Image (cartoon, rainbow, N blue to C red; front, top):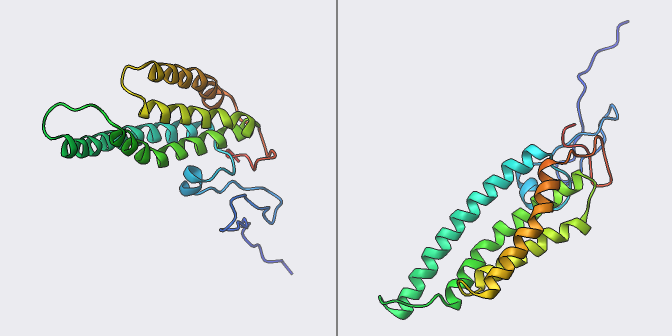
Length: 182
């Protein structure tokens, strides 16, 4: 009697953010795009980091453009058609519009840092960069505050870009999840 051959299937819990073990003892990486952008759990590889990072930067530019247009329109309503200074109303509009994009950038950075076996101790740098950016958006144009936070953001971003963009991730599973390259 010949036993029936059944296809090897992987068991993946659809509701879990972390992959589960399959029948054959192989761990699978299964992260939806929503989880890649919004979850702080799991790992992503360098390619996903660059693709998602470039898309996030493009959407940040687009959101900033829309916020500048809306903020400028609202200031035009307040001040009329003449020259008017950039005010708190404009800055708060940009800040509110940029919150989701900033969160996505932090989530991408955190997952990539976890792939290199670095956790929140490095992830706080990404959070500080986002806070510096928020201060920059609210600072008056060409002010000392704007210059200081701009330089702080740039200097703090350099190690993140080097680690996230160029370091090879840990092969196999680590404490943060399974290998995104399988």
